[in-house]
Amino acid sequence: MSKTSGTPAPTCPICGRPSAEETRPFCSRRCADVDLARWLGGVYRVETDERAEENFDG
Ligand SMILES: [Zn+2]
Image 1 (cartoon, rainbow, N blue to C red):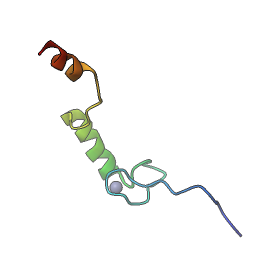
Image 2 (cartoon, rainbow, N blue to C red; image 1 turned 60 degrees about the vertical axis):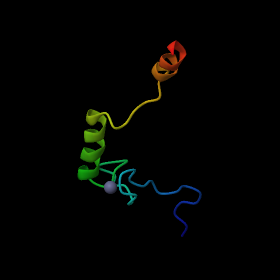
Image 3 (cartoon, rainbow, N blue to C red; image 1 turned 180 degrees about the horizontal axis):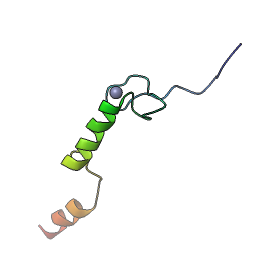
């Protein structure tokens, strides 16, 4: 019996463990919390052209 082939199991982006269905894509609620905290803390920075423009004004 072959279950799935070609579909890699998702892993927690925080610690790299197999993610749990309840807290996908995280492995646990704790990791989900960590991720959220990072967002709130501004660690996760989306690339914007703000910086590029700053350089432009130089
Ligand atoms: Zn995790």
